[in-house]
Length: 123
Image 1 (cartoon, rainbow, N blue to C red):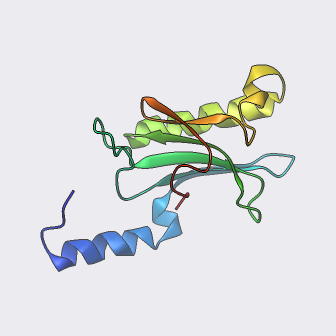
Image 2: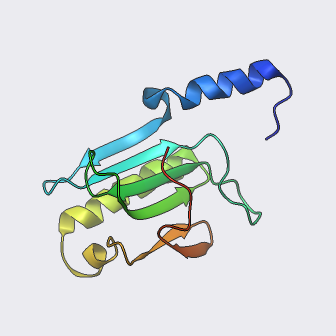
Image 3: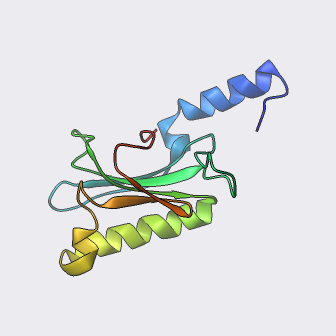
């Protein structure tokens, strides 16, 4: 979305710099992995289609932000549901759900699947 005025741009910048405004949900697993879901402020769907303005990421820990997994969403409701699903799968801790959240696993971005490290970082 293009900004119509400098004031609009400053308003979005202020929201982007406020972690409480950006954060949709977060959860720390017993092993220290951190699941964080945020509003990105801009769309990361560069191939067209629905704007992907939310993302859930799994990190090694809140202190070690090496990313293990990422999903992007178009709506806050999708982001909240996605966050809850990722946490639930990680809490199960075994089988396909757990293997999905490794550095080698692809992450989901809209209708495309990408390898970790090819996307933008978590805001």
